[in-house]
Length: 483
Image 1 (cartoon, rainbow, N blue to C red):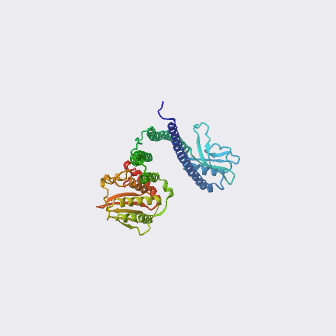
Image 2 (cartoon, rainbow, N blue to C red; image 1 turned 135 degrees about the vertical axis):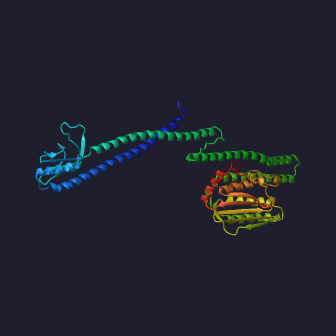
Image 3 (cartoon, rainbow, N blue to C red; image 1 turned 30 degrees about the horizontal axis):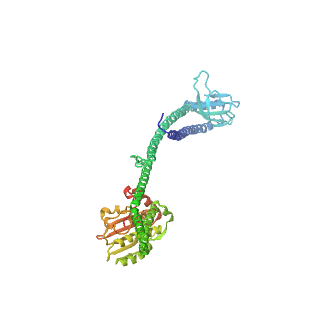
């Protein structure tokens, strides 16, 4: 038994039949046209020659006796050779002279450009011969047939017809073989995809579809499917890591909340202690809610759903409004907050998520820059892309940690005592990728510069987002954070 499933066998049969039928139709049409055009060209040549001979003989046959006409025709026949076929007949269709013993009864008194079998003389060869010509009626009433022997031309046409049949048969065989080979090749490529898909469905998420050397459409399909599988595997790994991180990072505030409540309840009744414990409980609950809200926003941005809500946004206005919110906090810490966004910078995007991304960057900068420091946020455009930059002169991020800084809940050891969950930069990257842009971290010596670049056009944005997803390595495919 064959190991191939019936569906694949059916595909091979259908492809083979379709390929053979198409090739056969094309070949049949080409050979038929060749045969018809060759025969038609031969007939036109013979018809022109017969007409030319008839036009030349007509004046010489007028006003002559029958014997004179026979003499003219005999002399003409001797000069033209055996290809000439002629017959002079009386009004009653009786032969007077000529090399044709009789004519078919259906030939009229005057007929042009017809083909007929030449009646054989008694005792002549049984091989049939054919002629093509015309019949005219002379002024004296006799009928004259002038024709050309076309037996050789008919044999040539027959040879073309036989060669065409053989060529058609050979084409059909080759088309079946080529169609079968082509369909087998297609089936093998599909079989590789199916086997890999079955292994993946069985739980082997690390399995990938083989990509060949030709780089054809199947290889492009396999590469796209592999990128999709990389993305899915990355997202699943990210979900597991998020679940682990949530379980780890939420354990501390929830444990503190429970312990504080338990200790407060174990002590003597004290309204002041109760109030202090409730205030701290509210703060811990707010931290947990903030963490959950950040994770939900990251998930929303990574899903791509907000692209349906894209509208025209002035990024410069978003930067100015967000900076205005953080100016009091910066002033309280003695930090100079400078805004450089004088001209509108318009693009299509989701305004709330863009505002959240800028807010996260400003929140990090104001949080980590020491008193007397400086923070600058700017927005500008080069005509194709919008650029938002937040620069500070704080402690910065070591180069070795900059890629990891985008991982969820990833924080430097020196910053673990500061408030925050480690989701800020993760949300920034998710929002930037949603808009088809890029985010980079650079050293300012001292300080950190975070640069966001976003395309103006929404269609370019979507294409760039898809390209970023395809090009991003698995380790960097997870939206992550640093605060």
